[in-house]
Amino acid sequence: MLEALTRLFSRSDLPVTLHEPKLAVAALLVHLAAVDGAVKAEEREAITGALMDYYELGAADVEKLVLEATRRDAEAVDFYRFTSALAALPDEEKLQIVRMMWQVVFADKKNHELEDNMIWPIAELIHVSARDRTVLRNQMARG
Image (tube, rainbow, N blue to C red; front, side, top):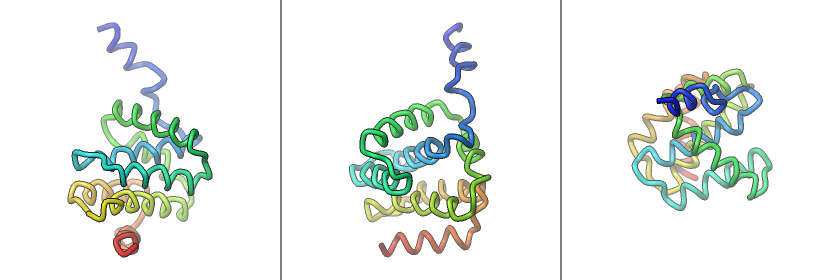
């Protein structure tokens, strides 16, 4: 019981802050890749590539970021702790986040219903319109 209380009040349970948008994005991408029950190699590569490209990170930094994101995702009970950190970002950054999510979805050339159903509420929570979400999906599906 003491261990459970310690975890409850530990730093890792604090919400991701605006100072950590990379971690929030990485956690959402990690969760998205696993939502259909299996993380495929193509999805892992898409996560790594998206984070390296967008945030201009090296492989070692991305590996650390993904490990921490995986841990934070496992501890999270919902997406709010991640999306709250992203909702205040400029619109262009939020569109890029949704674009990265679709890159992960279509990395294996399939759009599983659970993946699609995960992106919809996240896009809403970070204030990306249904139209923009759909346009990005269509762009990534063709890509």
